[in-house]
Length: 138
Image (cartoon, rainbow, N blue to C red; front, side, top):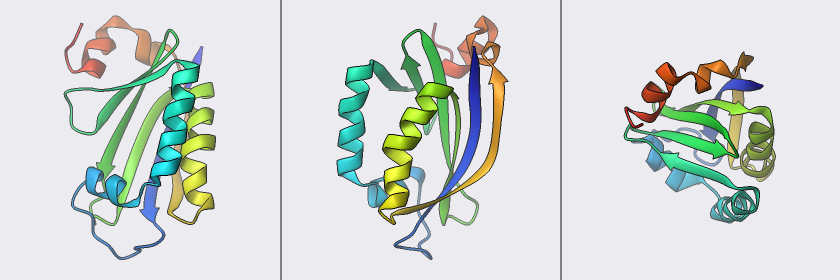
């Protein structure tokens, strides 16, 4: 199976010149909580679980028997965040359609795609990589 490796840049449409202190500051200040709650409910129905690792702003995603990873970074100028995801295509499509796109449609976020590539599943399932992905667990 294959995954999508995607890097996006998210900027607030409502506070264009705001310098954010951290990724959490950006998300907590701009995220539409009704969209978040809707996605949370849908995740439960589809058995999708997000688990934070011991690394800052890193999250693993369990989608059935598959695993994905997301890292979030504050940009150098502090005006946007950069999100890198390695997800199975179905999971990426689910998240884009139900989480990211509603924020765009409501005029909350502007999202630029910086990089997009299909990668082999082995990048995530090889045991030697698994430890680094989980921060040393298992």
